[in-house]
Length: 434
Image (cartoon, rainbow, N blue to C red; front, top):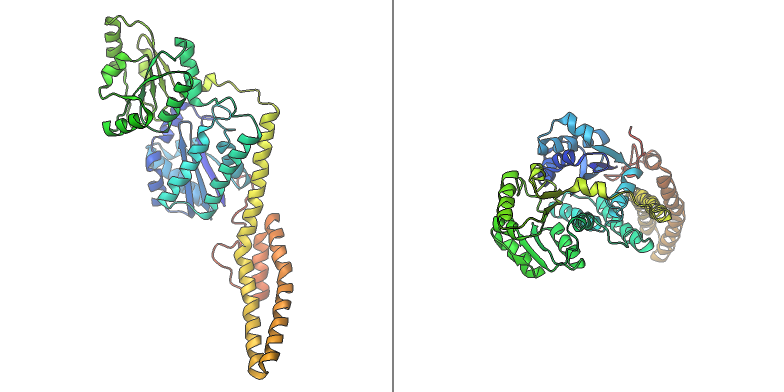
């Protein structure tokens, strides 16, 4: 059973989402410590969503285990976490991931960054050995669907992204960013995206400061041809724009620090406002910084307000159609795969019986006669097994794989391999909660 548990900017305020994602770094280890019936999972944590995709044998046990893990890593009470998390499964879970990977569920419709984040989430789960073949196929298919949506529609053609929208807001305040000095806080994925967006706007003077250590900052600076800074206070006095995206635990810029910097800037005759773009979750910039005179904080909430729903029209409908079709195809393939071990078990059973009969014939007849009997029995076995193999796919797609396996057990006494659906469908599920 595929299950989605998560929350995003769609139904949570950024502050609540920040608290929910605060323990994301420890979530994998905590889920592994929880009792439950989860075969595997993948955690997708970005600046505007926390999502966990499960391959589970039991619905309630698995949802309860993951919810408890989120509560444990965030320090929030279980009732709060339960109220914040959304649960989907089966078709709804598959379609949701495909929509997310394609940028259809993003704060900025059609954003490109999310596709890379989906691939990274799978890679991390593979490194942690927390995934399963079903989840790997799901995420790999999501990446293919994302590419199909991108190539078949123009939703991502404008290059709009969370970073791009934030920089548009900044440019509206300062004018062109081409002649501005920008300070990057952080050296991760968003810093690379921000740097690319800045250069696309003609900005050439960029400095980078990293709270995780000067070596990492120097490596980033060398590989991206930017200036590295080691003293944050002096860098803040000299820059025109700050783009924060480190996501470290604990804020990099608080009220008193920024107020002191602004006082020094004012004393030096620098009266221009200082926009601070905070794309990190958890926040890099304390909310109180927005009260400092001369400072404008452009955070994820501001981006969400600026990214007004776009009139995508038929393009959005076309993209949604691709997602729905791909989810249907994935379900059919998964259903067929779910019964493959049962078909193999039936084939093994039939050929074992045939081999016993051939051995009996060979013991009482000459070799030529035994070979002819064996050829005839193999043709007969192949003909008899063809219809059960076809029916396996039909009943699996129809949602009754357990009836197939129960019939094999009843008629032939075959023990089903582990993982075969014997009570309910282990791959497909209804889209409404039980």
